[in-house]
Structures are given as C-alpha cells and as structure tokens.
Image (cartoon, rainbow, N blue to C red; front, top):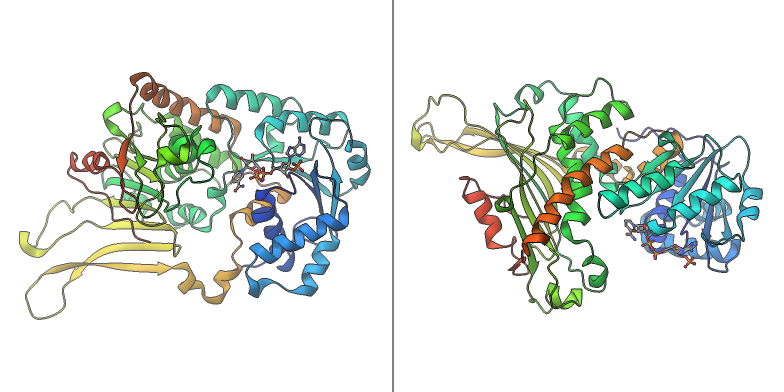
Length: 484
Ligand code: NAP
C-alpha cells in the first residue's frame, strides 16, 4: 500500500563533512536505507570529503559503524551493507585549502547526476562553492545541498545567499529544512488540497485559532554555549515552525510544483504582522529533575537567551483576518510532542440545550510521536439519558493505518536527498523565502534585546512559563495539553 519505489538516476554524491555527526547519524544511514529499498541504483556513488586523513577503506569502516549504530537492527543486512560500502569512496580535502580538489575532479563521472552536500559549518559554504567552481568539479546541472542554520539574521542570510549565487543558480541550490521532509508535514498538503472536506472551512470564518507546538524534553546540556547564541526563536521558529505555519495558512498553489508552492509560502511570510511585545513570551528552564538550569547549561550567568518561546501571530490577509496562530516551542517540557491543532468555531446556531456538552471540532495533525491525524467531533453520548453530546476523536495513526509498511516510509533526510537527485525543489526553501522569514524575525529579536527583556523561569516537566498560559487565557482560549 505504501512505497512504490522508483529508482532515481545514477549519481555521484559528495558529502563535505562526511565524517561529521550529521553525516553519521542521518545522511549515510539514510542513503543505506534507500539503497536497501532499491531507490539508490547500483551505478551510484557516495564520496565522503573532510580534512581527516582517511582512505576509502577507513571511511567505509566509519560508514559501516554509523549504519550499525543508527539503522534499526532489523534493517541491517550484512550482504546489502557490503554492497552499499562498495559504492563509497573518500577524498581528504580542506575546504579552505587547495589540496584534494584535483583528485575529486578526477573522481567525477560523466553522465550521472552530480550533487554536493555541504554538511559543514556555514562559514565554509563560500570556500567550497568557489573551489567546486574554480576546479570545474560542478557543472551547470550539479546540485548543492546546504544545511541549517541558514544565517542568524537577515544580513547573514543575504550574505550566504550571495556567496552561493556567485557560482550556482537558485535552481541548483537545495536549502534543507528537514521538517519539510517529514511524512506528516507533506500530508498537510495532501489533507488540505486533495480533499474537498476541509478547504471550504479553512478560513477565518470557520477557524477560531490554530496552535502549533514543538515540545522537547531534552535540555541543551553539553551544547549550551553553542545554543545560547541562537535560542528557540532562531533555532525553531524562524525555520521549522515558520514552514508549518506557511503550509497551514497558504493559498492553494495552482499545481504541486516547486515554485508554485514556494510562491504561496512566501506570500504567507510576507503577510505576517510584526508581533507585539505583549504577544511574545520567552522562558528559560529552571533546575530540576537532577539536571541544571538553562543558565548553568549556557555557561553564561547573565544569559537572556530563550529555551522556550510562545507567540501570538497574525496573518494579515483576507483568509485569516481575525484568526490568531499561537506558536510555542521549548526544551525540558513535559513531553516530546509536535502537533498542529486547528480549532473550528461554534456552529452558527445550536439546536441543543446549553447543558448538552458542546465542544469545538479540532483537527490535530501529529508530527510526533505516533504520526497521524485526529478529528475531534461531537456525537451523542450513548445511553438513554436524553440528547447529551460528547466529543470523540476520529483517530488515524499512520503506523496503524499503514501496518508494517509504515516502517519503510523514508525518514525526512532520505526523502530529501532523493528529491535532490530527482531535481525536485518543492520541499526545499528558496532564497527569498529564507530572507523573508528573517526579515520578520529580526525586528522581534531586536525588540526584546533593546528592551532588555529577561526570559521567565519555568519548571522542567511543565508546559512552559506561566505567562504563556496567560497569553491564551487573555483571549479566552487554552493551550492543548502537551502529551507524549
Ligand atoms: P560536525 O560533527 O562538527 O562535523 C563537521 C564536519 O565538517 C566533519 O566531517 C569535519 O571533518 C568537516 N570539516 C570541518 N572543517 C572542515 C574543513 N575546513 N574542510 C573540510 N571539512 C571540514 O558537524 P555536524 O553536526 O555534522 O554539522 C554539519 C552541518 O550540519 C552544520 O552546518 C550544522 O549546523 C548542520 N546541522 C547539523 C545537525 C546535526 O544533527 N548534527 C542538524 C541540523 C543541521 P574534519 O574535521 O575531518 O575536516
């Protein structure tokens, strides 16, 4: 019922940063799974590139270990792993030096897709793009894949775009936001645009409000000093949550085509109003549960960086006039859970008594855990007790609906890398989209920095700071429970 696997064209994929954490945890295991599924063809190759003095064999050993560690045991097949490792090579290259590039050029084959994954710090993007160009390693059909963070403000995002644009066209640049590769996120588009049921109601007239939650239980311990330079707004809202908001709020594109979809997302970002200070709540987790506080983890006693943020966002266009979007994300919260909940308005007239127990219809799209969808509907409470209403969920978990085949659904990175090879940019952010997102984000950050706002403390295992509850209560609404 699920994956009809369509093999992609043969490719040479060079992973700069091939020995790094992201390559080991996501990119290489993901490629193995696509090879196992028959989507990566025999004639394809993966070339790791980093400064480390490795050779093909020692890099293959590293890839083998990564598969052992990060691919579920029941998907590890010694024979297939051995075949996969045959496709792997290594070249030692310093992004900022001149050695190794001629060797890499010699390794490139004609007649296959050439893709270059920049899984390195963004400060190296320019150096790599330039050397790929100068050494004639990349051709006009080549693709480059770049990782987040894509800038830390509008100026740095523009500078990154400019550096890449020197040697590559926009059609060659794939900016990854792995949220867009998630099955459920793509399902958002299917639910909205492949069903007649929801779209007529998808507007301020019928939608009371939308809640988008990305809650984590983990702290920033061990990477606090690094995290402290970004915070929840830059790390989560500007990219991932903005993308979710766009998919919920956008107009139907004329076609499921990369630029048509991205044009509509861009219009949403441009329609976002500046957020008023009283509609922003920032928090830092307190110590508790045997762990230190955010301040201890950040190693800066005066840190004002947020590990939690809640925002009330207004999309200023005809469709959404009067429907607020509430966004919240944070670390050390009650459960690891991401969801989008669309709460509909009351029916215009009730034929039932006030005491009949009416509650709103809510469409919940769960990203994790237990990916799926749930529609809260009213039914009659069973039994002879008169017409009393109760709310029940029409609940669909993808795992239950798809059975064993759900295990074969590619994870976000696998899907996105295959899209790069296919040349499909629909699920990647365009340069103007990223810049528009920063143009909205920058003044908010500058505002709280100028005011010297201090984040409010919240307890680990809670659902965030008190003021975030008030943000909703003031509007006569409440956050949904964060449930794992
Ligand atoms: P990492 O573990 O620090 O790995 C960095 C990689 O870059 C290593 O392979 C390193 O190998 C290589 N490298 C460093 N300097 C180099 C140079 N001058 N020339 C060539 N290669 C060089 O970092 P990571 O966590 O994998 O992250 C990579 C990128 O992905 C970053 O932009 C990060 O923000 C982004 N990202 C990571 C994650 C994640 O979960 N890890 C998630 C989202 C985005 P050598 O030292 O041997 O050169």
